[in-house]
Image (cartoon, rainbow, N blue to C red; front, side):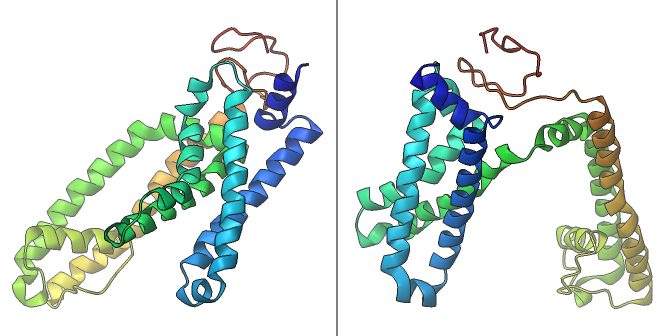
Length: 267
């Protein structure tokens, strides 16, 4: 293999010792960078260790920049990676620190803070290291019609119960409008219970009790739908490796595959 093939194997695949070591190092770097962002948001820590945090942030940013450039270099169609989900995440998690030094002036101070907070996108880079993510994603896709029908039913139920509570309780209890009553119904149905609005009449409290009991059953329904689909998907799944196509960057090939299932390029 030439150096590009070797680099591609290390960066995009995890079936070799070098590839596994690269992935582990990247996971550690991602978690470290997210911790830096969190520490920076604590005023007392940032005030005391601002220079040290900034230095470490530059180190992390430079390392992510090198990784981003290497990923572009070692594939035959860089545009595929740049416009992919992971490519966009890598870009968004790398540029904020650079942009914060390009723009200047006190009038854009808040915008700069928002740009730097984009660094939390780095945590999304961890998605690619979750082995079961593709199975779960397929399970969610196959369950989307059932979940959509379930959500539709919950919305209709919330509108009906919210309107009923508006008629029963009225302005005196805080149910000042139908939308506000629907908000209370959804909060109660999901067992969140903020407590900003509460029914005062016996009938309203009785209906609230029914809504609370319904909430426990409603929470279990989407969980059951996805769990069944996930179990079926996992049972029917074929073992795939981490080999990535150099041409189109598609992953998830069979162990005995010689060509990419997406573009036909030789693996």
